[in-house]
Length: 251
Figure (spheres, rainbow, N blue to C red):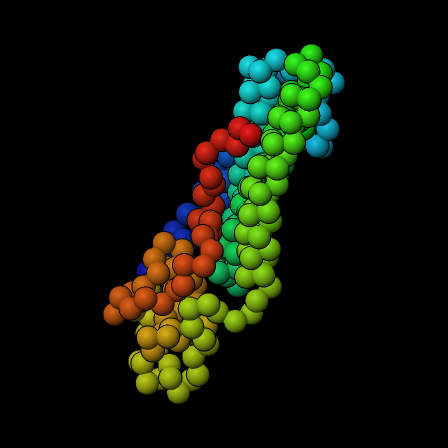
């Protein structure tokens, strides 16, 4: 019995090490690709928009598209690289906390979406503010663009602060911490992992599960694993699995 338990622990440790090496490999590949692209196109005004500065010269339309697409892609890759480091930290840390990991990944994704909303602004500001098309026309197009951009940024700011608020909030959105009496009455066995409950959570439907198990469940579901009652309110989309928005931010 003890030997079989030791074998299971060793296999679990080996799987954890393999995942760590894979995540480190992905991190290295992303960062090398980002550095290589910026070095190769160092004379194409790619770096200025990263710090919210317009390009030196007024870019032609297709070159403006090129700058925006390249920066948007590479910024996402940098964010994914940092997500890999975050996953490594939580996988190798003591007291693995899936809920905390998911909240941090979600906050990082909404910070990325906010930054990506700002990213094309210096390029298109420089493009639209072209006096060769007439002073009045360039001022009108620039004003319209900045107005529409402001509404998009306000929405991203609201999502970011909602994610930050969820991170700092100690209480759970989908239930509360169960008491020892409630755990004993439920049998002290998690229906998801089929093991003794760790940090048990009482859902609003009165079913009890491990905190990590049910937090991972609610990354993709909104109902109780047993009775299918609606438990989690759809207030904020989560990115706790490390996913990212694949749509390009062109304007």
